[in-house]
Image (cartoon, rainbow, N blue to C red; front, side, top):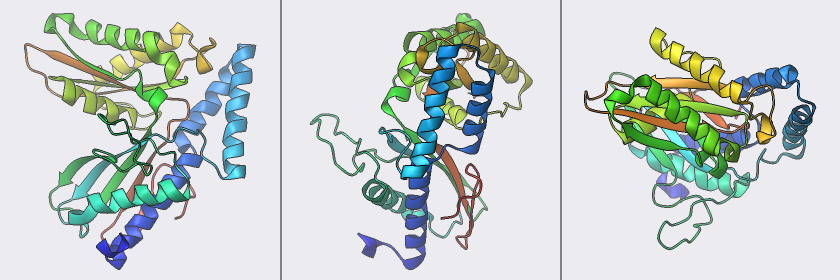
Length: 301
């Protein structure tokens, strides 16, 4: 399959494959720091013991050079590429090959199952896997690639629904709270919760995934969106789900809201959830293929 790629393209393949391996074994800095803060704030003895197990797990992943969790998810790419990025035309194939290599070498667990024949491809390559979302930027020649390992448990609470506009933002908050209360425990809390608001289910769902990956500790620049983020953060933490659902002081690492204009007759909400070991990464390639990793400090590929 390497014959499909130029020497320069193979550099991207190998860099992304290596980064996928790093992501599977090391939490992004913001998730690790927030989890450390939550561990320190925890008052429940049982929950403290769970946090101790989580951090022992993180240490062993590094020591043994193995993924943090046996479920390394399905790989999702969110690409912000310049129209002048020299490798744009073949980037889908480049990323697909990187997933194949990482699955074999890391190894990542094969999770791509054919929908109608229920057959596992064995290499995480199948229809729609890896999943790729594109944002093309005119006049730019670089590319930023955001990667998410979408595990089964953290995907279970995912939801997108369209409300009557009369439901208002109270209806949005109710949908988020009910979703986390209903299925949040299946997603290995504490959780990162992404909320998307828009005009239809697909746009709200995509916005919620982008919100999930925005970075722990960040705020939406819109003041009203910030208020909703704070309200949901406080409300979800007051539920007391705690780490792994055994009750505790806090239940969520963060809550992020992203939004788009909505039709006057609809108000859609999407909800995406990340587990305590949310594995996401962000790598920026310049046109000369020099790169910067923005989520894992000190990592070189």
